[in-house]
Image (tube, rainbow, N blue to C red):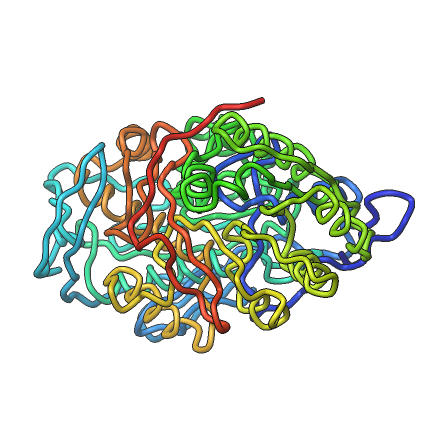
Length: 511
């Protein structure tokens, strides 16, 4: 990682600062969780307080636009209303009604399926099949005026890895553009104030302190060091509907929720159950490798423990130093031990390094399993032939199947309108989901909408799928979603294995 020292030796960059690459997935710093969020925090947490403040930009707030305004972005603090621009520090988009597609809405523990459309024709305009609440008694307040409801997004844009979670912010911008072109909430359009958390806990704290006064709610935020803003959000009662929570502090925040729900020390049973059913011999001779830094060191051991409780047997559980580039000794150890199942918690670059080392030594396990962190263009391109046959466990509809998922088509389409050429990603998808959830619950509350009522309402949301965009998430209860499916890299393309339905087998608690 550029200019970061996890110890006395300088660490080679393990996350490439490329903006055309989806961000790696940080796993919770306190335990093993259901998603591939180890790759980021494991590296960044190793650096922790050693981040040089001089290498990151000032925290700033800008606003994202919608149709009729420039698709927001940038850091110049311009304000756009309709087609005009003034200086001020936010984008407010007005005007426009239209038609919103129907689909499947999951909230409050259930789901309803619908088709057709709902017309956005005034103060009660709804989205999807959400029933709009009466607007009687609607009151303005923090972030709400007669014309707009301002939401915020604080994500890692600058820092050691530029653009780390930019896709989360872009996805919310895309949803704001989509919503403002098709609907409103009691006559009000959305405005998005974009903050840069700079891959730094103190920046996250500063952003949320500012957001308490500047926004009604925060939506789709994503930061590798999200503990900083947790107390600020809770102290002012700020609803914080995130892409996902990363740290225990954020998860413990009572006003904070993740569209991708996770909780410490829970690991989904779907992964070991899939392996045992389809590769019983491999399940009995498994290996877990992890980068020996930050959260990964804990998660690697905890995940092996959880899968062991579920019936797998690990012959080899081994950490690898960040500064280690020669993976041949680890591959030789797996060969000597007769390992047939290999899983790794790391970043894309390290996944590629291991895949290449296995190929070079003629070691081909029955299963090479990775989490959604590897669902990137970079892994496919850089891994080449060595990456062939890799299996991923995922909890969302792969982009290769977007034509069968109307909500995913919406995300992909509006992302391109906001930022042509942008690559969609795992975190962008869940950021879109968080924006969808915010709008649906705010619309349902209508005139009862307030920060307190929104928090209370979201705390009851369970089995949230964002119109089938991803597997059911336990947003309100804050439990790791247990439904996952599997895809495999064949001839350079990800294809489903074991069917396209999710396997839902509960979770195992460890640690």
